[in-house]
Amino acid sequence: MADGPGTPGPAAPLLIACALGIEQFALRSGRSRAGAASGPVTVLRTGMGPRAAETAVARALGQGRAPGTAVLASGFCAGLVPGMHPGDLVVADETRESGDPTVCTGPGLLAEALARVVPGRAVHTGPLTGSDRVVRGHGRAGLRATGAIAVDMESAATLRTALRSGPRPVAAVRVVVDAPEHELVRIGTIRGGISAFRVLRAVLPAFYEWHRSLLLPRR
Image (cartoon, rainbow, N blue to C red; front, side, top):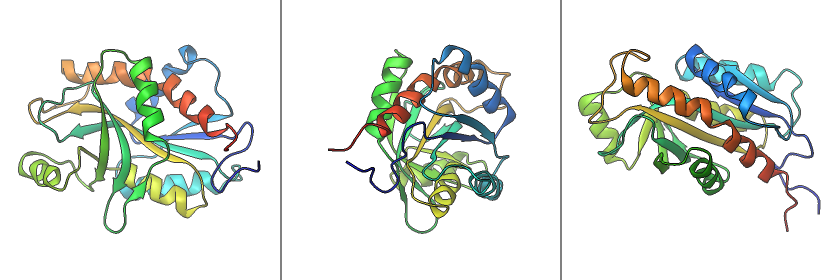
């Protein structure tokens, strides 16, 4: 059967977008232990904030990259649900910003793969909301009241821009670096930040498994 809209063909590329240098370093350092990918993989550092993400992703997808390139937003996030801990994983079933939400591709497959790849870490699935600034205190509680389980600055803009450039699979996986009872002051100087870094370094095999699942013929 022919591939449906947004389904990449054999050896389809995977673009993993993150904002920070430390996130890019974690993802790249995990590639040596991740095994073989199903196609070319790029880890793109976009810079912080939704505008930077939009610009970087649009440029990357406009530079002759194969149609149907899968796009996965990753990196750190702030958890919104009480009881979350640094190092927990968030799989978005949709990303939210102003306007309609973006529905993610195969969040259940990603959650199952992550549970196998990073055993012992909690995996939360639900809405991931966007913000144009760091959210703390009452702002965090307000976002939680909307039903979102986590917040970051780039995922929603990344996926929206990816789909604007053409139909393709999109997803977002974030590692909680701070949470309501575990607010982080500075990445890398607190135990929670180090824990989140180690988890982010370990997730690529799950990303590859999700990507390979997209290449299976649809029945």
